[in-house]
Structure formats: structure tokens, C-alpha cells
Amino acid sequence: MTQFQPRDADYERRVRDSFARQALMRTIGAELARIEPGRVEIALPFRADLTQQHGYLHAGVTSAIADSAGGYAGYSLFPAGSSVLTVEFKINLVAPAAGERFIALGEVVKPGRTLTICRLEVSALKGGQSTLIAVGQQTLICLEGTPDR
Amino acid sequence: MTQFQPRDADYERRVRDSFARQALMRTIGAELARIEPGRVEIALPFRADLTQQHGYLHAGVTSAIADSAGGYAGYSLFPAGSSVLTVEFKINLVAPAAGERFIALGEVVKPGRTLTICRLEVSALKGGQSTLIAVGQQTLICLEGTPDR
Amino acid sequence: MTQFQPRDADYERRVRDSFARQALMRTIGAELARIEPGRVEIALPFRADLTQQHGYLHAGVTSAIADSAGGYAGYSLFPAGSSVLTVEFKINLVAPAAGERFIALGEVVKPGRTLTICRLEVSALKGGQSTLIAVGQQTLICLEGTPDR
Amino acid sequence: MTQFQPRDADYERRVRDSFARQALMRTIGAELARIEPGRVEIALPFRADLTQQHGYLHAGVTSAIADSAGGYAGYSLFPAGSSVLTVEFKINLVAPAAGERFIALGEVVKPGRTLTICRLEVSALKGGQSTLIAVGQQTLICLEGTPDR
Image (cartoon, rainbow over all chains, first blue to last red; front, side, top):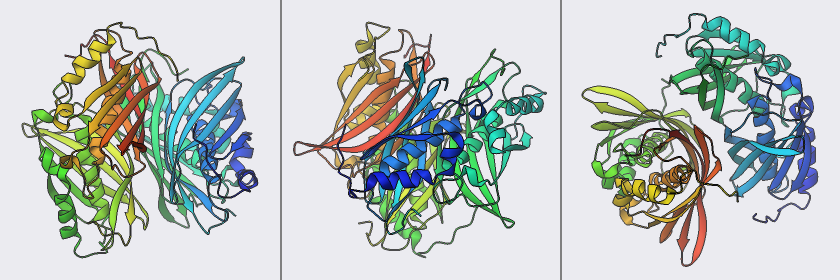
């Protein structure tokens, strides 16, 4: 795993503050589980009201936590006073999203001044077992001089 | 626009029944707005509890309605007794998701026995104006002989 | 189809000059078939030395002409003195690339000052029949003040 | 790195035979550099006739070797008597494709009976230095009972 040097020593607080303003994360019950420079994990307990027609987690929810994990992985490397937007992402749903708890991992693959590329992974935890349920790739844009709030 | 012939005359009821079982759509307040063979629209009124850090609709919610619209566009062309899974999708968030109401359109580009490809579009309505906020492309798989419930 | 106003009246010559510098297009025998603001077509006659293991056009060649068509569709709307880079693209190969001639269409879906999003389509012509063989979506970046050569 | 068990002990010969039938690989001068179960590398020396307008390797060529590397990574795990098709891929061009030699790596992330998902990476070698120039994600389909030739 590449080691990244954050340009803003205060990156963790900046990520926590921004995440706390993502109303959707609260609505679905997602939490920041881990913050490192260029690497963020979001945890989501299963809830029956977030499912698709077969009772699995809806791909939109899987995508939501993957997108936020990647977004904050990138944001952790951005300079102070900037904000982050998702340009695009692609996600493969590789197994049914069945589990008690889901972990979305976002990891910077290529940081950049304007664009940053992340790898996304979502796993389902069930009876102590972890299963990869989604993998993705994401492009972020850094808006310098545009504070996050 | 290509015209598609549904293989199951009862496609509309099948789509409505499946959509009604997507608990997430109810949770976020999304509704089926239009069902044609190979073309489905989902409408979602804005809600502050579905937003990201700048107060816009979260990309995960935009993706959720886009994914479901595409999934049901494909499903409308599937044979009776089958079900649909999203293999993968890619989505570009092309403008801030600001509006009073959002319309996700899923449209089959290439139907197939096993795999079906859809185009996805999400627009935001604001003061009578419609703005394209996301475009995507999606791959679906048809599970024959696996009823949707 | 949206109508786009080019910011540089000389867009066509700019596209032709840049395309002429893409050595790969010459190597594979591709030609610019049509240039309109935000919409470019590239034509490629079939050649047996461009195939994959089943004798169809290799997905990399399909991607090459799709990527260039989209890139120049975007570039046609860029200001004078700028250049274009592909940030990323996604492509579905929806039918075997069998034909005598292939047409790649790139079309701007959302122009922007920094990022431009295109839709890509590749068709195969065979005995007067056109078949869609690939659809894609592409993100371009405009480098202002960086002339193309 | 996950370890995969090939279902066909003769996977290496099968991959080599199929690659040898990809006329495009010969045309551009690409070679199989490494074959392991679920992991394939393709090497390509730089050639000026494969470039885009700035003299870098064209994204279509980068995509071609990435697509073939992923395709054969998947194919190495397929059963005897099957063949492989690319359903779709997505690729980010993360740095200018400048170098003396390029290495495309395809790696299976999730094998499956019908669909297999791969991660793609392309690096440029220049003066002993390796630089990541592209990352991608790919979906393959296994056609059982359809021999590759």
C-alpha cells in the first residue's frame, strides 16, 4: 500500500466535520470507521429499510458508502480550504449484499492537484466472515479555495 | 428512440410489484413515474436528509434511483419468471444535484438474453427548469427461471 | 440532439490538425468522417491485422476510435490554444465487432470549462446494415493555455 | 494477493495459443510477459506509430494491452473448452503514457461461473523507473462449450 503525506495536518478533523454534514450518512446509519491519509473506511449496519427487492442492501446504498469512502480518502490529501466533488465512479456488484454489517473502503490510487483517482471496495460481514460484494473506481475533483462549508 | 417488444405482456405489473418490494425506494420517497417497454422513470422529491455535505442530493441517492430506473427498464423486457441483477454501472455527476424534484431515466440500449445494457440519466427540476445532473451506463443480468420473489 | 456553439470558429481545422498528428490513427487506417461542434465521427475499414482471437476487431481498436471520436467531439468545443486529454472512459462491447467498416461516434453530453462528458458509440457496417457494437461514456479535461502541439 | 486454483491444468498453453491468435497484439508488438492463474502481464515496447497527438502512447493502445491482460487473466481460470469475451471495461488514464516500454497487468478480483471481474493496471518504464499510467476495471463473460478457436 502506498503511503501518502497529507498536505493538511488537520485532515482528520476536516474529514470528520464534512462527513458529519452528509445528512444521508446519518439517515442510513453509516459511520466513519477509520481515517488515514488517502484511506477511509465507512461502516454501515444492515437495515431492512435500505434493501432492494430480494432483501439485500440496495446497490444505491452500497454505492453511497463506497462513494463517500472514496471521496473522503481523496479529501484527506487535499489542502486546507478546499472541497471535494465526485466526477464519476464505476462499481461492480460482485456478490449479493447480504450481511449484518458492511464496510466500504476508499483508497487513493493516484493523487493529483486537480483530479484524484480512488479504488473502492465494499465487504459484507456475516457471522465473522467478510465477503467482497463490490469493487469500484472513482474520479474526484479538488476545488481549491472553496472551503467545504 | 428504439421501440422494444416486451416478451411478457404483464411487464408493467411485474415492474410495479418488484419496485414495491424495494424498501429503499420507500425509505427515500421515490416513486415509479413512467413504465414503457425498455424505458422507466423514477421520481424523487428533494429531502434534506438525503444530502451530501454541501446540501445537494448525495451521489449515492442519485445512483440509487438511476440504478433502479435502469434495472426496471431492463426487467420490463425480461421474460416472465425471471429476475434482474445489476452487474455494474458507471455514473458521471455532471452538475450539482440541486432541485425540488429529481427524475431518473433508465433506457435499454442493447437488450440481450443474458446481459442487457442501459443508459441512465438523472435530471433536477427547479422552478420549472430541468437540468441534467448525471449520466450513466449500466450492465444488467437476467436470471431466467429465478422469479423476482 | 443538443446544438453546441463552438468558442473557436476555427474548430474544424484544429480538430483535423490534431487528428493528423495521432500516428495511431494512420497506423490503423482510421479517418475523420464528420466534424460538427460537439460531434465527431471516425471511420475505420476492417483489417485482419487489427483483430482479437476470434477474428473480430479487437476491443482496443474499437476503444481507440471511440476514444478519439469523443476526444475530438470535446476538443471541437474547446477554446483556441487549448488541448484535450482523456481522463477516463468506460465502454461496453455489446456485439461482436464484425463488419467491413466501423464508425465511431463521439458526442458531447455535457460541456464544461474544465471537464467535458461525452457519449461514445461504435457501429459495424456489413452489407449495407449497421449494427451497434459498443457504447461508452468518457470524461475529458481541457488544458487551457496548452496548445495541442 | 489472492491465490487462484486453475480449473484447467493446461491453462498456460491455452492462454498462449489464444494470445498468438490476437493479430492486433502482433501488429503493435505486444508480448505475453507473465502468466499465472488469474494474473497476466503483457509487455509493449514504445513505438512512434502507436501515439496520440502529443507523442504519448494512444489511450486505445493502453486500453488494448490492458483489456487483453485482463481477458487472459480471467481466461486462465476458465474451464477447458470455453472462451472469453470482454463485456465492458473502464479505464482512467492517470499519467501521460511516456516511456520506453509498457507493462499491462490484469488480475482477477472476483472469478465467477458466468462473469469474472478484473483489475487492470498499466505502467510505463523509463530509465529504470516505473510509473503507473492507467488503472481500470473489467467485466468478462465465460462462454462454456465454445472453444476459443
